[in-house]
Amino acid sequence: NMILFYDIGTIEDLNASDLSNSIKSKDIISNLRVITGYARINNIRIISSIGNKLSDVDSDIAKEKIESTMPENPLTINLSEKNNIELKSILLEHNGDIFIEKINNDIFLNPNLKNIISFYSAKEVVLYGITKHEEIIRTALAFSKIGIKTSIVEDAILPINSMDVKIKNLIEEAVDHQRDNAIVPANWREMELLVQRARDCGINYVSFKPYS
Picture (cartoon, rainbow, N blue to C red):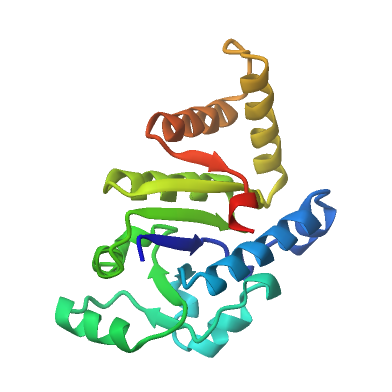
């Protein structure tokens, strides 16, 4: 495969009240289901990131996923570094999703990730899932840094806390109206600069529709 899907969100990131109060939440959940189904039909490997507190038992991790992105036959790649021959053998025998253990929201701190990308000859990664917008952008930048074409499915991500929602809305409004001199609080400005950096690095915001 030349493309990987990366479901960056797990239920541990989810604030149920914010999800239920989100106007677009039903659409996003539906879109996540469509994207997951597209990957299954087209034999696209889905990888997910997990915090190390969830990495002990695969079945327990699966319970942490929302229904629309429920994994199939998940395999956990934990933080202990594997030699390339061992890792290839594991991946050759595996037919299903892959959980990548992460630390401090950084999937690239897992020493096995680059070899997994190489094993699947991945040239492109598509990011989606329920987590903070900032984490999605920083992960996208990390993939872009190693030469992977990276896209974020903008209608299949959900900023969880209200601050993220305000930031995203403010950024979109500023872009729409070219309000370069808009006065915003420092933390919002930092987020705006992060989004601009992502765009400068060639990271695209795309719709879920091509994957339906």
